[in-house]
Image (cartoon, rainbow, N blue to C red; front, side):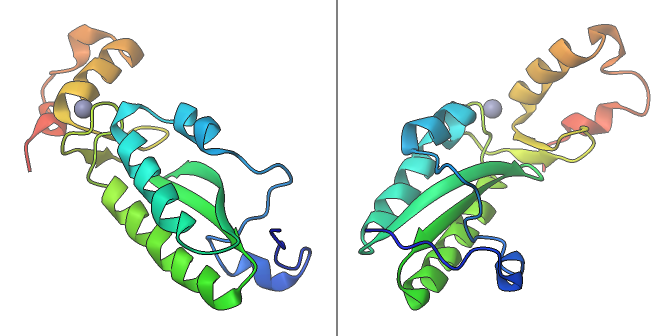
Length: 146
Ligand SMILES: [Zn+2]
């Protein structure tokens, strides 16, 4: 049985990876929230967390263009270790295009930051902006390879 960490204490706000939603998300739900590029990352994170007894990933969101997941565990030490793993997953996701899985970059100039490779970014912008303005002077820097 999963024992949630104490609710409504001040402490929970100090830790970014601690679960604080009412309804936990399951794996399929989390996978549906994001594009194909992050599916493997999510799958691997769930696999690694499943090695810990009575622990699970229970929520996820996009956090400044990165995959940010929350976990719960009944053992305080295990939870700390899992948070370390989820932190690493978050850092990995900052370099993986969330649409296709190739090397991407966080597009911080978007209203909601997304991590996209150049091709997917262009595709994304084509939908969001007038395509004729995409390569106007001073804006072409967005597609520079790093
Ligand atoms: Zn891509």
